[in-house]
Length: 356
Ligand code: UDP
Image: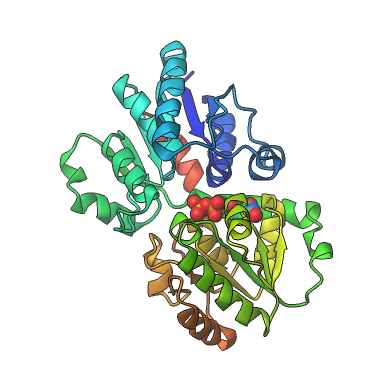
C-alpha cells in the first residue's frame, strides 16, 4: 500500500487536508499526519479535526510562538527525524505556511517526492512570508497540484515546464470542503442563534501585513466601524489580531467573537450579506457561497475573482473600503461560473497520487 506523510500546522491546512484524507481512505492510501503545532488552540485546531473527521495526527511537534526562522528550523529538524523512520513514498504539503516549507525541505533533502497542493499561486509580493514559502516549496516539489489556470501559467512562466516535475491542474480542494461539509453544517451549527442580526457583514483579519502595521490595522478598524453604522459587522477574531488590538488599545465598535469552527464559518458565510477579509481561503469561500468579497490586501492570488467582478481589492484604505462596500451594497452577480473545479479536486489529486 502506498504510504503518504501529510504535513499540517495551520487552520487552512486542516480544512484542505480533510478533503484528501477522506479520498485516501476511499482509495486505499496509507496516510500518516504530522501536526507541526503552528496553530494549537482548541478553536484554531482541535475543532477542525473533530468536526471534519480528520484522522488523528500520528505525530504532534508542538512548535509555535517563536519567530519565522526558529519555527521553520525546529519543524525541519522534527519532520526530518520522522521521515527517516517512516520512509514514506511521498510527503504531502498544503498551501504556503512555515509548515509547508519545512515539510517540503525535509522531504526533498531525503529525496522523498514532495507533493504540493495549491502550487503555483503568486501574489508577487515578496514581503509576504507566504509568498516566500510558496515559491521555495514549488521549486523543490515533484508533483505540483494547481487549483487554477493562473497557477499553472505562473509555473510555466517560471520555467517549471522544463523541469522533471508533474504539473497537474486539479481544481481547488477548498471547494470540495465547502460542498461536502455544507450539509453537515446546516445540521450541526447553531451559530445563527447566537448572531441575532437579520443582516450582517462577515469579516476576518489576520494577515501579517495588516496586523503588524498599526497604521493599516487602525485604518481597517476605522473603515469597519463606519460600515458597522450601516449594517452590523461580525468578526471571528484570529488570536494574533486580538492580541495586537489589545496592545494598541484599539476597541472596535463592531461584534467580535472567538474564532469559530468550520461548520459555524460555513453558516456565517451562507447567511451574511457580504464578506470583508484579508484571508486567502475566505475570499474563495465567499464566492462558493454566492457572496461578494472585499479583500483587505493590495494583491490577491485568486485573481479570477477580481477579474469576474466578485472581489474588490482595497488594501487597508478605509475610503476604498467604504467605496467598495457601496458598490457591493446593491450589486447582483451570477456566481454559477466554474472557477475552481466544482468540488472534484481532492478526488483527482488522490487518484494521481495513487498512480505515482
Ligand atoms: N475559518 C474558520 N473559522 C474562523 C475563521 C476562518 O473556520 O473563525 C476558516 C475559513 O472558513 C477558511 C480558513 O479558515 O476555510 C481560512 O483560514 P485563514 O483565513 O486562517 O488562512 P488563509 O486562508 O488566509 O491562509
